[in-house]
Image (tube, rainbow over the protein chains, first blue to last red):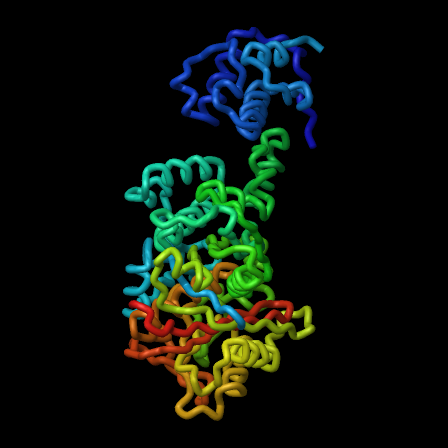
Length: 90
Length: 413
């Protein structure tokens, strides 16, 4: 299994990360479009169930080339909370 | 069998198209759905399932049912979409939408938990390329609970659920399991659902190397030129109900699952055994309270694999050899190929369709039968009034199953 970069090595800018997260969210649950991008809402509030959440998070980590321990992302965080985790230096 | 259930609904997607109409017409016409595949594809001959866009299939279904089905199907792989489509079709056909019964009195048995490695292999390739990108939904797809979960969510089923493997005998075994659940009194209605099996290239290569799969030329069941089975694909749903429940709901029934038999050869190999097959047929007839001379028709397992065809012809002769003139025999696989784990349910539907439509479909391509003692249907469909029929399903590992269907006295056609 190949090693993935650890989150925070390059400290990505939060705004593009939020955009990427939103794009992944739309890919997994297109219905969320009606809700509009709201960084203060959780994935659950935006209509994601437990598997949707995992799908979105795996997709966004893959796109960004970062790896965050799944346990940290397992909680129903707001979009900005997820972005903070993805860009947090480690 | 003490309280044989009745068939109250059916649905199917086959290479002939969606629904029972195209299937019945294709069978009657003896139109082979088996075609040569483009150069480089393996196997070269196969029958492919009609396209299944669930949104299109559900057009015309009650809005709430369609919405629930699409929601449940959202993350499912394509083979499960076909399963949902036929389950909804069976549900409507059995009038469970218009005349519902308690959700916890409805069960679900899914046939074919194996021989469906195509999807898994595609994910394995994805994993090899990018380990971190494997979709989490595969954690659901890889389990036999997945079709049960998706279909029960779509239809609101809350009774018991089972998935039956047993390879190519799995369809018949699923019907038997449903009959057992109904007889035990746990449920009043049971959907038996089989989705299309898509074996992986590795699985197909192993079957070809074993000599079971006709991979380089077409093969006709029970013909002296048979060379193995041709891969087919279909999804089917058979809805069984206790007669008391069907009467309470006011649902008409034309055919009864009068009996079944299952016998093991005690053999782990891919060696068909006429003794085990005849024992399963005899047990099924005994369970149905029927004698061999009362059987007018056998829907044979008839794959086109030489050893299997010879064993089944011998088994039929053992059980029915003294009957004059003996039952007619055909193989639905001669028209749509071998549907593997779904075959038993598909062929149960084919049997009921022929019984209710009053004909027997041809054995496509059969020119030189391997046995003069079996009465094979010829190149054209023939009219027939069938009141008792058998449908056989056998599998590697010495698994032999047979179902008995009888017309329901006074049943409307």
